[in-house]
Length: 115
Ligand SMILES: [Zn+2]
Image 1: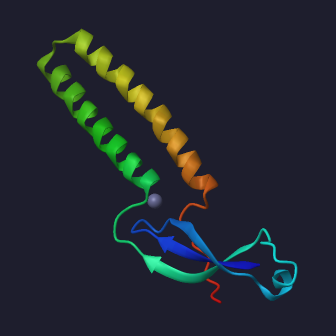
Image 2: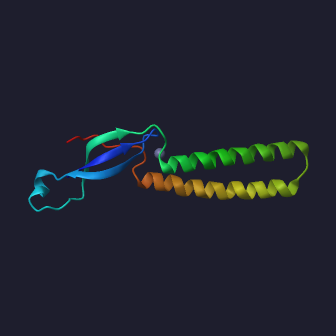
Image 3: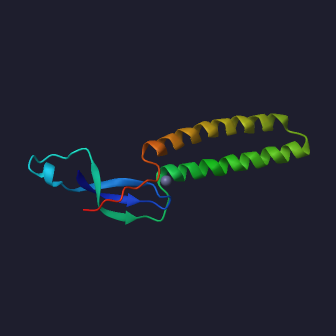
């Protein structure tokens, strides 16, 4: 177990920063072991990059949904509606990819073990 800086974002996700300290076990051989622990934690107010992207895509999706609703009420612009639906479909796929990426990174479960 070796100790690293940790950055925690407003959304609860985190990322590892600089390496700070070897653990006792690995100190002698001068290598970093695979297990990361928190040396010091810094809180950032803004969202992590993945959540920021997700937010943008959710907003975009919402806008498209509202446009479709309006066009359907007006009973016109079938071509625009189809184009919008296509875009929503694409956004959904991008959102799925981002959610999977967030999951892979540990999705908001910041470990709390301090040096
Ligand atoms: Zn996040």
